[in-house]
Image (cartoon, rainbow, N blue to C red; front, top):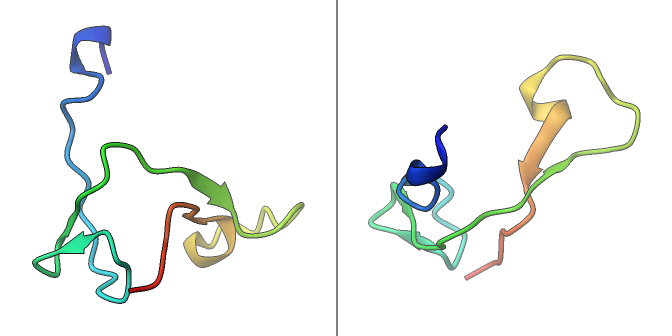
Length: 58
């Protein structure tokens, strides 16, 4: 990503239980934080490696 693209991307999200989800497919936040699921997992499985740290329940 180039510097002039920062802030221009959109974030797709299908987690409808999150208060930031709009229309079942879009994240309304201008920024999200992606965090590791646990320290030292490194399994390579997506569900083990990361999660949205910006999630907030509706």
